[in-house]
Image (cartoon, rainbow, N blue to C red):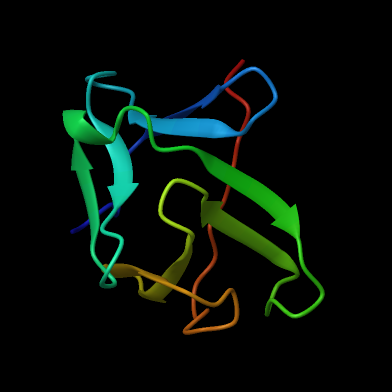
Length: 101
């Protein structure tokens, strides 16, 4: 999966968290596979809920969790994003959020 240069849209899910979708095609959502470190963009992940939580144990003190599968987003390298059961695994990159004006 390569998200380099991809523009994603984060949509509020009424206080329960967020869905992360493609700006180009809002039916394409970011999701995880429950039993491995896979990260995918597909319409079947439209109900996956993500949360952004402060965690002192996380490398940059923020954890991005898919609460649907209980997996945390990690940037292994700029071209390899993965998910893990722990918020402290392979946090080698920076995930930037911008508010679109």
